[in-house]
Image: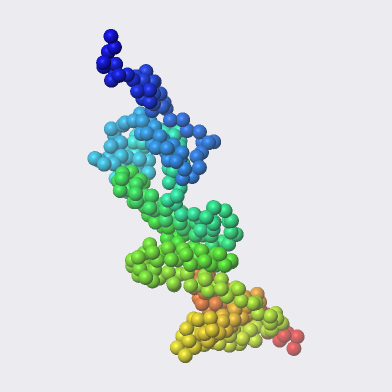
Length: 387
């Protein structure tokens, strides 16, 4: 007799059997329990799903390996932080611990950090993090969307250094919030990173672009700095300098370099004539640049008289630069010429915002004056003897 319940008990062919389901679970468990295998020669594509999956696996494996790190209770500095080699060095220099205690703890910290670093190297967690979140990082300023076309303009390297220094400070801040100050190198490390950030930032804004792309990159970098400082004029929180103060000189030099070089041959002129020309062209260029602010010259439109005035001021400035560069090539024959030479070289440096160069010239000028005076004296007495 037919069983009336057989139809209800019949297996659905679309569903896996219990044996198939058990095999699938066993395979999944094997994948989960299999140690993370990182091959540095087979890195995934930046931003790919594979990169994100590999990074997640690397994090899990890194956590597992960290559990085997030497757990020396002596390294527990307080409830939140551990002694590290960097924090121990800072404490030793500050007189917080004695050399004997430093030596004992340093060996323990070095052993622990070596284990943690070995885990990071074995899993490649740092490299995979960058690849997994590649889309979150800006392209180098000298690359197109495909990451190609590097430029030879020196401003790109300066901007890269400044951005890298800023990223290092941001990473330190994130680590500090997560682990505490001492775990990320303490105050000394923070000061080191901040000093490098300030130094590279100033260097980038002082670098003169040599290409149109470089000028656009420097303007973009200045815009970024303004955005970081959250002030319309880009000034830092203490208001000491504005972005305009720092970037103007480099951009002005770059734009002036595009103008046609003066055709005049200055090499045949004596120094006193060059001094007179420098005074004339400096005054004239200032007159035109100030005159550009006269409202009657119009706005910055393509047919504005203001642009004509600015262009003429730039031409005069370029001529002034060429004159002073010729002055710099000469060896003054009198102490008065040496004095005026130093003055004009300093004035040009200050006009370009290069105060360090102006200070260096000021330091060297007295010696030049003394040498010129000695030559004057020698010539005078030689002439007197001949008479």
